[in-house]
Image (tube, rainbow, N blue to C red):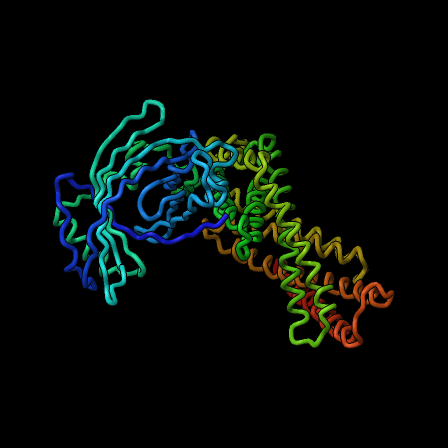
Length: 505
């Protein structure tokens, strides 16, 4: 469904209804103004029964009147005073009671399977004055609003008020104009707004935001450390979810990492939480990471395949066989991931994580010091890597079993990295050093794994060409042989890098 998005930068003021707006044509960069226009705006605001959107400073509405009738979703940005506004017109979304998916998908991770219901109706008599800059370009507008609101929540009330909204148009970074307008509107009678939005004023207090990171404090316990880490990675998961839904660059990777980091915290600090009550979360997070992994692996392989043939003179048939098939697989894996992310099972997982952080089932080591818990977790992880390395040393180098064991060592190194990152707020240098070594091991053995996969795919293509299943030109086979040689050399370099840091672990 077609949607348009823009960054909205505005100032908001409470004002007495009888106060006239000042003449803003004296503001810097303003050369004129259009005649004021008056509109009647009628909006219905939607949220869950728990006000999951409002508690995250997000509003969703269906509004008639004015130049932008339609469905609107407003979300915070990192810029002070700015919000992202996503709009869908009535021609695309005529239903009066069902918000369009173009607006619900970006916040699905917050509303989950809970239905959206009307929570307020707001009528606004708006008088808009558009300010013009050079060339008669609109650069800002002042909206003088008389507002009547009715909360539809249980025990809700009606209210009336007046306010001014000054919004930048075009150049949303015009801070000079914004500051001058703020001073002028304040002198004219504008006051600090009592609420951040019309909806917030209409419905009153909202539940506390559930995604607050608790923080460690001065003398943190093991439980403090675990809850801080869980909240941090939960928030990252929530932030990347909407990006995965639109296949944004690197989003699948980052969401997968977030799910793995959550698992690492749950499994890496034994005894801090009640293990029996968190086991199911570990399993669900493992499944989520696996589903995302299919899409991530194909995404990575596409980039690798493109780089393998970069600068090479090959036929379209070879490019299609190497890259095209992987792209088809990536699209299929994304569809599977999106389906999983719209399932009740996924939403139940998110609810369970929230509940765990809000009301953690503690284990016998919850009150241990965070430093002691960190040392124990890092020490145990380093020991397991050494054990896997010893198993590797007992296998014939280059054998299938040896290559499989390299992958096991890599996974253990990745787990150590995650645990080092989890205890990073404690600032211990010996943990940091262990993490650096783990990163070298993980990266080097990842390169080995990539080269191994590439060589296997090259061998499959050559076999298909020899059997007649795949029609390649002679130059293609020559290129494949050259690429295979480069990959073999890359494997040896990566194994050398890995071997060079073993003594430092």
